[in-house]
Image 1 (cartoon, rainbow, N blue to C red):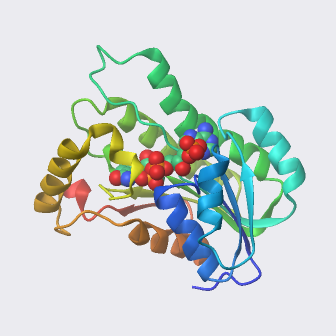
Image 2 (cartoon, protein in one colour):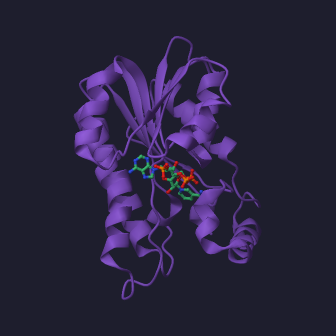
Length: 239
Ligand SMILES: NC(=O)c1ccc[n+]([C@@H]2O[C@H](COP(=O)([O-])OP(=O)(O)OC[C@H]3O[C@@H](n4cnc5c(N)ncnc54)[C@H](OP(=O)(O)O)[C@@H]3O)[C@@H](O)[C@H]2O)c1
């Protein structure tokens, strides 16, 4: 999958799947803009890339920052956002601040990104957002994750229709060993979750960031793919 002479913005490029997407896009020949809130993490990703890259710190949940980012970014072809903030816990105990953070990363950020990028992205370009299998496979304590992922998937389809012919897709990962995403659980609970998923999911393993990066490149380059939620979840939605 070739991305030569293409410019790709990756929001969430400082860690996990976003870092892997940045590496894969760069290896496919793209010039990559690495965005996310932490400059240090973005610099660490930049050090792994051989091709042209730029580090551009950005809080995508702040409309003023997103507006200023696109004022100065210049022409580009594809935008990928993995931005996410977890909010786990029973609905009777979850604090409003945690819920707001989850909304900010998974709902407000995609809204602001599309709103300010749509007039500037190449007409044959694409947006790719990341939802997650909890949108279709709820679990106690993950209601806000289900809500934001489901909302993002609905928004993706609406944008595919509204922004056509610019393509808009979402990728829905299952459990992926992507590093810091699962740190909040602690090592023991994370290992239990991974082993439980690997036993029950049809793929019989957890995902790797590279699995998701390959799907993201496919979503970027396939000109007939739009308004789709690609479940790259090891069959997790069937468990
Ligand atoms: N890993 C899994 O098992 C799994 C399962 C289901 C769904 N997913 C979804 O897949 C996506 C990628 O997951 P991952 O494992 O790579 O998670 P991750 O390592 O936590 O990546 C999320 C990225 O989003 C960035 N971010 C958060 N808020 C932001 C904001 N307001 N503006 C800009 N960047 C922001 C974070 O960087 P900063 O904090 O530096 O900004 C971070 O680099 C997420 O949407 C996640 O919900 C993952």
